[in-house]
Length: 194
Image 1 (tube, rainbow, N blue to C red):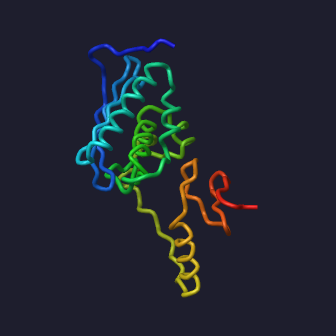
Image 2 (tube, helix red, strand yellow):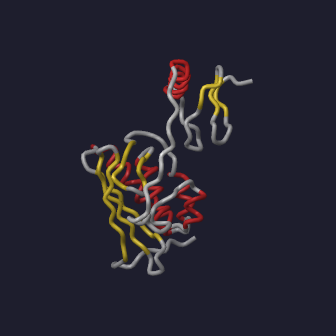
């Protein structure tokens, strides 16, 4: 397939992001019809390795998009990928990012996919629907049950079982099941399960 390059001047979106204090920018250039055509990713204070890799990922994404790869394919590969830096963001549509690529994938989904397609990826943004009105009554919180020592111990052991668990290929954290790990999302097993 022939690569469809962009003209010198294009419509674009510039977005500043922060993931656990790590800041960066996403620049998205679009064709005249509003479809995504190119992406530039710049990060600050990350060192030459991460900065260089994200720059290269942006170039690869741009060439892929211009060569006909659907944006959904790229988003599918990025969303739910897990590695550092990860954590809370300042974006109310993406409150937590599992990685910079997870954040970028979710940002692209929110800006370039329909609400239905976003939901298929497990992304629910405020942009997709009407923002909650300021006059709406705050939600009532249910009373939380009292924690007993036994239930606290069980919950602590559940947290402990996730501490060394690897991430599954689907992006979820696997759970220890005996001598192996099992993914609660897709059911994949890792280790010596029988």
